[in-house]
Image (spheres, rainbow, N blue to C red):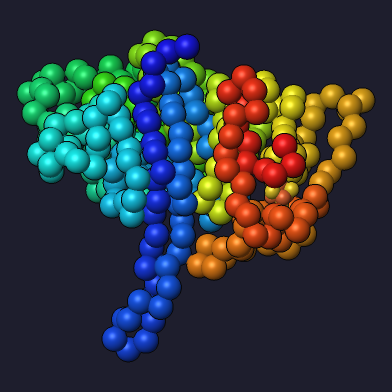
Length: 321
Ligand code: SF4
């Protein structure tokens, strides 16, 4: 097993909610609640859950793109939140992000070559000629043609824009990339191309990914370890094969039951969860999933289950497991 690149301990992020004329705090959204996770060098850790479960907030905090409420995030042993602004700026090339909608992060008036190269210039990595050569190199790696370098973002399709987003992220030779729903806005055939590209880049550049998605079938193709998030807390973490063959948490089972199976002879009963995900402004007491869990017991309403190892590194937070 490779050594840890990212170590997260008891990570907490609450967003204050202000109300009234004087903006007085009236509550707080508990977006991330006591999350522990480890991402090992060279692996792809998949983080799955419904919208509003806190996936993107965790992704941003692993790159220190926002302040935390509590806990610790370490990259290669370095406490990210203890770094000064300058120390963080120097580390930034190593930790990068790929966004769901690369178009919104591209300036429509800046040519693509300039957009990919601007971080290189900012970090003083190369002169103008070297920047152009490096940009052409990463464009080529990401499946973009060299004549695309002088085009504007609106001249590209969704899949090509995502390739531009990935090229921007790898231009600085990072070790760790957070990919936040990078394929969810794309057609299925284009999704496969982008997933293959991420796989190839990982192999050739020894990258480590946090891959955020609401789609377990996408995660299955790319991730070696998967964490399932519900209302800001991890409820199950396991190796991919173990999770898909032997899901233990009732929420994971419900999510998996909705994943289509290619083989028409295999039947899987779909588990329909009752109600919507509760508000993170006022999460349920005890097990946060008890309001929707088909197996809930009395104890579930009062006692929060802890995430514990039930064997071979398979972690589950449920009183019944
Ligand atoms: Fe369901 Fe109880 Fe397990 Fe929570 S602790 S998942 S409510 S059985």
